[in-house]
Length: 282
Length: 232
Image 1 (cartoon, each protein chain N blue to C red):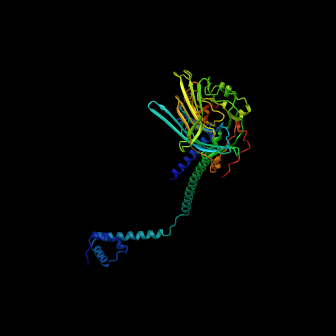
Image 2 (spheres, chains in turn cyan, brown; image 1 turned 120 degrees about the horizontal axis):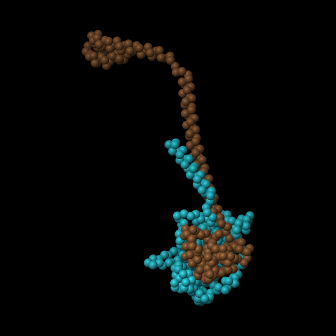
Image 3 (tube, rainbow over the protein chains, first blue to last red; image 1 turned 90 degrees about the horizontal axis):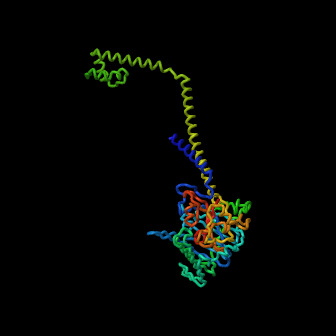
């Protein structure tokens, strides 16, 4: 019995020591789990982290909450693949935004491994933005930097109605909330793009259609349906559209633990020596 | 008077000489038998001699004692055995304690690492400027992973480029439309195969499919990738 205990103790110590050494080497850069048999296959991706939001105008005075649903359907010979992701979008009167996302898929790529759930918050009142890792119960906080959003010349030159793009814009369209059945006036914009023969090795021309309903009153994308013969159909749809989200929505859950980010930019020099304040505990 | 056989006499002779035979009739019968049986008389004499010899020996050994060195030797042996057992027990507990301590350190280190793992890569400002468009047409789609790609996508404002992602950081996904300044998107760091990039229409260089690529993907609010930036 004593020998067994002694052996077990030494074994545990050696095992823990080995694990400690392996752990001390750290994961590969980017927060990935490393290569192995479980790595992403073709058509899949391995999630490494949410880097943050991109773009988006600050819209004030138009608070809104809604549930968004992203449905991707791909039809194969004799088979159909359908993936659905749901989440919440909210915008406060001050322009703060809240969006939670589950990265089960990005376009045609399916996530390998367990889906990660994040919340991205931009709090205009505090000037902070938060990346909340719901899966881990942690969040990072960064200051919001002001930037110009002017469009460059290249953007203007590539406006719709160019040769491969046909745009039909109906400013008097309408959108019906699938849950509340409320009808919203919306700008209905249809875009048809054509991939010419041989452009990507295609024998015949490929036609991609997209249609998006955007509410001018709410300054909000209500629905976007995209059909691409290469990937299938993807629909982004808002439902249960309401107003006035709680202000507490724009701060991370107080029970979550703040982890230290490296700040923005190379080396995180912006945040060096200046840790952002924690969110209000309301 | 009862008659006694030689066999019965043999059974009681030692008890008779040790005065342990209390039955008077049996004692008289034994004496009567020994008086008439020569063999049993000799047997009685032998038993009496044996008893006297053992009594004498017992009296002689009564004063004998164990030598002192035997006692001290035994005590020393006991102490030595006790010390060894105690040391072994201490070693066992020390081993178990050390293992527990190492496990605790391991768990603590793992926990600490998981708390700081997420921001291992420096995050860039996501409040984003969209000076450059996500041109869906990608007329001459640059080859991913080549220096020319990033040279073409050079950002006019170098200071801004050091601090923010700009649209020109991302090679647009061919034929997927633009992401305008008003459209909120998200930047997601992923690891994927080259064939996954080829699936989106990127003219990736030929390479073994097992090679994984680290990339930041600009995802529109509809969940569709709009651009890819390779991480060097």
